[in-house]
Each structure stands twice: as C-alpha cells, then as structure tokens.
Length: 209
Ligand SMILES: Cc1cc2nc3c(=O)[nH]c(=O)nc-3n(C[C@H](O)[C@H](O)[C@H](O)COP(=O)(O)O)c2cc1C
Image (cartoon, rainbow, N blue to C red):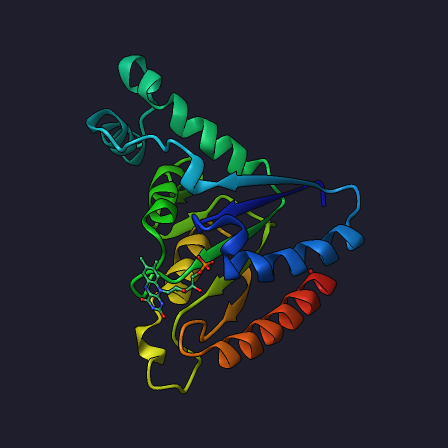
C-alpha cells in the first residue's frame, strides 16, 4: 500500500471524538505499512470549489459522452486537482461525525466535487453504472451523539452509513469497513465506554486492513 488519504470531516481538531478513534487506526496502520504515505485532507480548512454553472455544465458534457474544452475545461481545473488527489490513493480513511443524520456539508461538498463521470464512474452501453475507482479499500470512522446501532430505536435514522456505502460503492469502492463510536452525547460514562469499544474496533480494523 503506497498511499492512504485521510479525509477529515470534523472541524473540531484535537477535541474531535471521531479523530480520537481514527488515531488508533492510524497508529496501528503505520505499524503494518511503515512505508505508506498518509496524506491528510482537512475539509473544514479547504476552500472547496463551488459548483458553479460552468462546473455543472461540464458534468453534463461528460455525461453526454463529450470532452471538456475551452472555458469549461479551465473551470474544471480545481475539480480535477481534487479528483487526481483522490484517485492517487490506494486506500482511504474517512473521519466523519454524524450531522443531522447524515454527513457534514463539507464532506457532501467534497463528494459533489469528486464524483464525476469518466473519472470516478461511467455508464456502460447497457445503462449500468461502472465504478472506476477499483481495487481500493476504505475505512470510515464515525461518531454520533446518539446510538444508531442495528436494532436500536434510532437505527432507521442512520442515513450516514448507507449513503457513504452507496456513493463510494458506485465509484467502485465496495470494500468499506465502518467503525461507529456511539452514543457520544447521552452521558459521560456511556461515551467513554463507546469510545473505548470503537478504539478497539479501529485497532482490529487496522490489523486486517
Ligand atoms: C451540526 C451538528 C449536527 C449533529 N447532528 C447529529 C445527529 O443528527 N445525530 C446525532 O446522533 N448526533 C448529532 N450531532 C452530534 C455529533 O455527531 C457528535 O457529537 C459527534 O461525536 C461529534 O464528532 P466530533 O467530536 O468528531 O466532531 C451533531 C453535531 C453537530 C455539531
């Protein structure tokens, strides 16, 4: 494994519970792959390219089977930089809190930038979707204020895990492990137990990554 891209979607830096769990994964990952380059992408510190008319028009050109040229190609410079960085990795660690049952808007913005036809997916002649980011692994570490474990009363409100599985799965990344630290905000003792459990899961995930 040559490169792991760590996509960070919490703005809270050192205070982030998600990152506390991710760090355990990374410590063990580094032991397994000492030569692997770990690149960080702190989404809340990035000036992400807005999806302007030209960017969106470019997407439709690509969807129609065409190539970008002229003004549209120039407008796509920043999009292509993020796509290139994403595709240059063999593996991904996504660190994301749950926000309003889903993902923080910065992560959604990033996904809207990188998930592009001809780059991350394509439609085949039969109309099926083919993911173009093949042979890549992903681990997603999340933390949530409440508990959305399977079978719990809030389980059906978890739009985060199914969404991330669907969108990255469409791009060809189907080998995805989730480590969810939950519940974080219902009491100190419960949170500490949940973090300890998630750290153990993260440590084990690194052993088999
Ligand atoms: C804007 C915002 C929205 C949130 N929405 C939810 C939510 O829908 N469900 C939930 O269980 N917790 C929610 N939380 C709580 C966070 O998921 C929780 O505190 C998490 O551990 C924060 O992760 P972090 O410490 O890595 O930033 C929300 C927090 C914020 C700031």
